[in-house]
Length: 418
Image 1 (cartoon, rainbow, N blue to C red):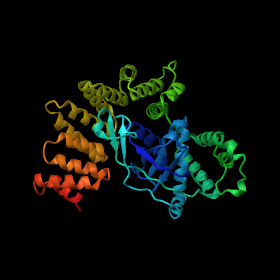
Image 2: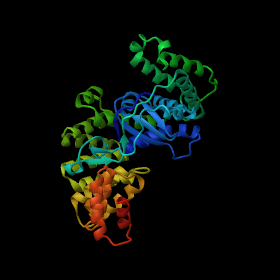
Image 3: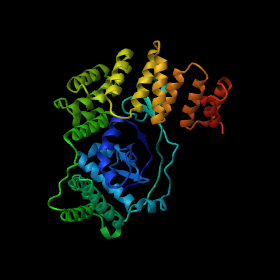
Image 4: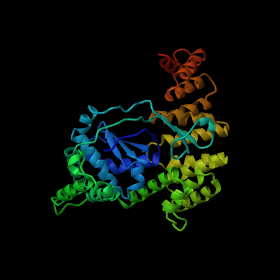
């Protein structure tokens, strides 16, 4: 566990789904009710993850971009759940110098991945998430707590019938990253165990594993492929073009390389090149909803609203489970296109999205879709989520002047004035 610096959450349907499915066996092994283990992605290059409240899993983009196998990722989360099961997080709460806060938000440039950015009024490809991470400072876990978390995490991996070699893989990677530095440290003068010490302990524990143990729930080939695509997506959105070119050179014609390059090209404004790469991906993988999502992003930024709507609709048709970000993206394009019936459909999509995950941009798009006092209510909700209370109350007052008394939006506007 490492200190959490000021950072923001990003929301992305694909990334959250892939990780949620990978760690689901751990949740079951830890007796966490199905569907209660929630994944949050932190936009920060640190090699880190943690669990809060026993059910909220926070994973750094730096960890996802650097860990090359889903087995190793599962080991990291198992370790963090081990802290929770060991009661360490409750103890940590008493030693925190600052708390997590609820009033965090992000604005995103790029529809597919909601990352850091500016103002939704800026136009193409803008989405926003609803929360983030404030600055906090935590004391390091003690040697015993880390050892216990490793031991309990390893037991969780075994109980979940996952591949325990993931623990070795991630600790070896950490040792490679920190070995030179840790070799100069006197282990008796720090309260945090050295990586080499942890690695030795885990290997000792693994030697006790039954010889007939079989990791029947280890990641499938499909899950490994999906994980590689997620890593490529994060690199494409969050890293510079130089790093994308290094990790995914033009000679690499794998799906993940095409994905990273298409996203990177979109990010720098090479929309035609991004579109060509995305169409190649769709031709290879006609049932992948997230490639259609990317196509929708690109066509929107090109001003091809009809094509963008078609791509997003296809993405939603193919997707499994909740996709509030894609629903909001489609609603945004529909308000831009504004053909007969588009605003009605946009309202329907925004309402569906808000039921699953409230986000500032969803309210902003909803305000664009409404033609009456409900637009003022939606703007009030938008500014409330941004923490701009004066503007939120101003629009709430406007809404109550024009809305029918007792209507849902009238009541909600009143709640914002309390």
